[in-house]
Length: 166
Image 1 (cartoon, rainbow, N blue to C red):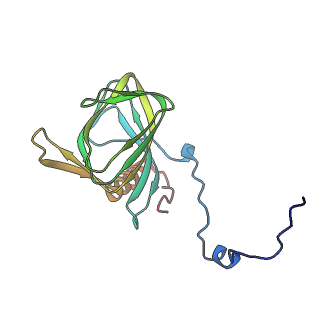
Image 2 (tube, rainbow, N blue to C red):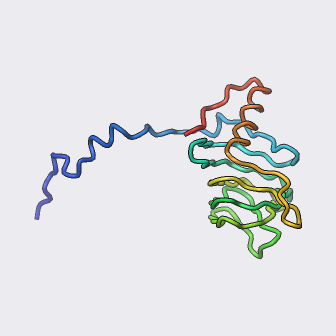
């Protein structure tokens, strides 16, 4: 049996292609490691900061057994460990290279880097709220605060920020 060659646009996809946004390729080497304010040994390398959807992605680097303060996720988060390891003080597992971690909205935890530190790709939807032990909100991070952190750092270093709003 031969496979027929389709030469016409039977599904009507060609007109839709004209409406599609162009793809984006981001080279992480062109983006600096930005120190996380108030948390020595914690750095972020933003890869996507979409102000329309609130979706943001970054590489997070934790030098050694440093801690990212206890926080609550408004939306889901997906993490993929590239190097090292980390865990949540409130959980009984360790994320190692190749581990993919999905966090549901409403999850509260405290990230602690392994002794060797970690680099993890995180993809976030919406804000995270920093909370104290009584669950009072004491700070927040979202796509806008990360964009400001990135742009301010680049300007202070004399670096042209990459447009990550896509």
